[in-house]
Image 1 (cartoon, rainbow, N blue to C red):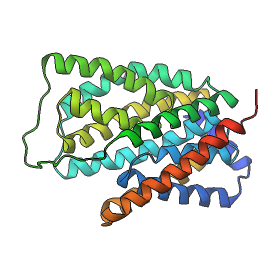
Image 2: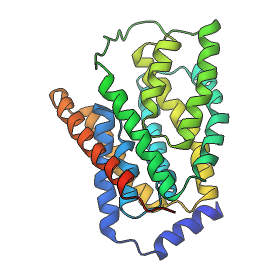
Image 3: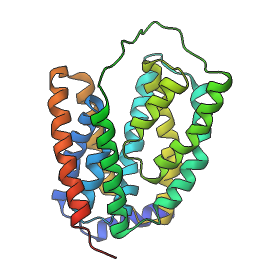
Length: 272
């Protein structure tokens, strides 16, 4: 706790311009909105913080504040709608924790140009993955009974969760693109409950990952809170507004922005 207060005091002493808080709040709005409609909001927030002057590893840690808040809100929302399976969610979360701890420790060590280039490579791979997808969403039966994975399905799922945890702790960006197919195809869970488990798992391991980043680095709590506030409101807006026809345009704009980020990260990163 003293480390937390020291970091907040350091934020205040740095006299960060108010426009940066407002700007990150706005980016959070966009990222939260995009997360609901198209996914990949963190692919915007981390590069933007890097371009604002935050070292990559600090931006990576600070982004976890918004991730934590966003998924907490989602967990509560699912619970209030009567969607919960804490037994399976906790089991899958427990499997991610060893990987998340190791990944977060590794993430605190990746700094400077190496972080920027690693981030650029990750974003390229995620873009290729998104472009390769057909984008067909199966119909979901809300009344379908809950599926309880057993035997080899559950074993493979638990093993693969370790890798998900490592990636989530390490860099997080695009983790949903890996986690959702695992829950749906490997464990055989329907898409409604996939999202229910996904937000619980990410929320749970983010507590541990954020704790490690806060312990090892001087993450920017106030900037992270501004981002988290925008993220929450943007996610709520995306969930409540009917903009289905705008999803394709949002994906196109997101891809254009990501290509620009990748070029900047690869070609204009200072060598350590």
